[in-house]
Length: 150
Image: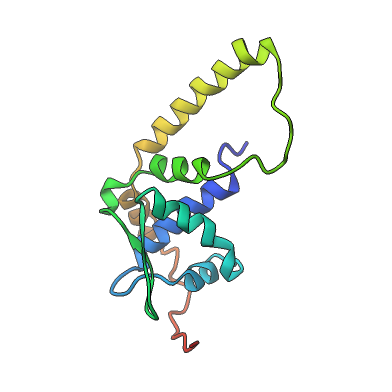
């Protein structure tokens, strides 16, 4: 059972990727998308949501891209997921239920479970995730070739 949307998972992965690769230059959205096998424009709205949440900082210019807005030990997975969830709209267009059972029983249960889930994510920092990615050599098989695109 997956508890996080694909968008939230991608947001956490993007922030960890930026934390690992943003030295000495910011990470270009194109390079980030390439490492995650996505179309280049696919991440833009998500990255902008993370900028608005003060998790990432956008750097303009020919060598621009994204870097962390705060120290990686001060950003939690919960912060990232909240930013990704806050910026989404109800994409499937399904109507909200008008149900006393949902309002009084199911809704409060889901709310409590969600708070506990986010509490667990708040205990994990980007620094923790970067260490795990380094230990597991997640990006070791990717070539760091130059990008000569103008």
